[in-house]
Image 1: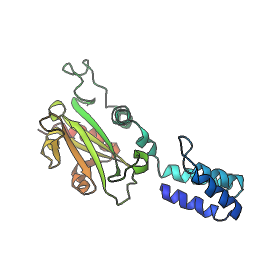
Image 2: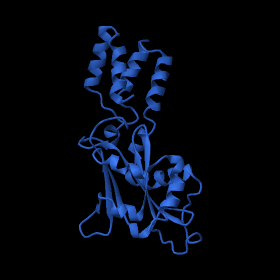
Image 3: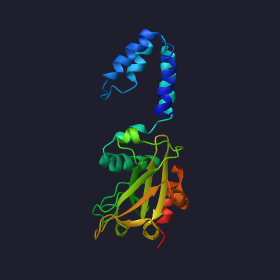
Length: 236
């Protein structure tokens, strides 16, 4: 269920209200300003509940259906650094406890160059969110479902292959998370590997609606991420 579907369902109920109540809603909406956590649908829901056009059970069922189909929507509201470092690193570690936070006790040469360590493999984690490419609004409103056929762009930035053995790319949609595991050698040789800035030492790989199928050889299910990382680290 997308946001547009939620509005359509609420509008079906609103259409059953007396004209006087619909006029009140229209009048309120004309001057309504959504400010978190009071969002754009709470006015409709409040009116429907107040007029018994929506039962409490109806509201709970609708709420559950929306949340279940938008389970990762909250990730689109995170600040870039919190999303890319704090959430992404913790998420990968939650999938397999063999992923460790590196330190000099584990790797005497460690100096902050990579994110995680697993069985002598140095892993760099990069995360990006799938958003509508040309929409000019906030990330939460641009967020895409995995089934939507819309132009999108995910930029995995600040890649430094010389400092890690494996790249683990995490792609987030509203309803799904996808993972790609590439050795540093594979990343450097993929056609979409390019300098992030002219003359810089950092690189990027951009995944879009046009080229995502070409990353199929590197995609793995979440339960296979750890094994893939260990295996990819052996590629030279």
